[in-house]
Length: 254
Image (cartoon, rainbow, N blue to C red; front, side, top):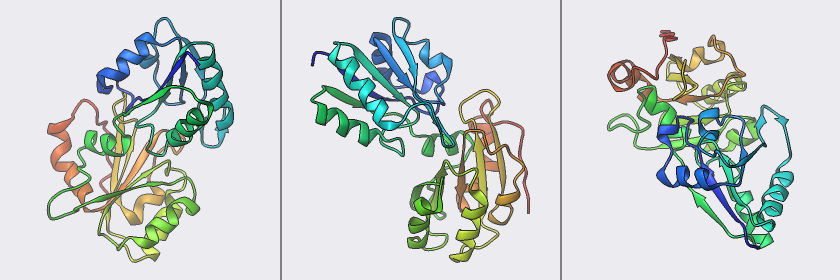
């Protein structure tokens, strides 16, 4: 094996939020295997590379995970510098660990380039600190694509004790909200949906857990759900913190 693979976190999508190392690896790449949410501006940072889309969106996979592993290993065997460009951070609900293990098993040289996880970046860009003195001393990041993923975690968290940040949960937000209320979370608990954080036209919805299921948003868009008292700070912070990245869609439901 003479090639090398970089598992690169792309952050929430804004090229200015990439790490210096991520930019360097893209510029030197021979092949970029990129996810569904990677914008064209990021791919333009790899002008000499071949590009191959390996994204997965809402159950629609361009290639299965084993296929991605094979692509990385074969390209490395040809001596290529490969960037596996993953949204957010490679090890936060992105199967980066699986890919690292596959490269280990194949004897491929690789590295992990951490990225800014949307679990933190998206709330921040919408004016929501995931922790705040007196409101939340910690936060939990959950996969919201199915109850089997988020259910056990929710059942183990005392109601209101942590901020909940749910990735891939827009389509299941009704079930998520019902599960939380069933577990003792107050229906009046503040909740937010952040869509397209760091992208042009990004928007947010602000409301309550009781209103989460009926929030008027497009469930096919990329976004996150935030539940907890810290959401109340969005109306005080967002206008000064990130006016260019927070859109006009704000449903302040009682």
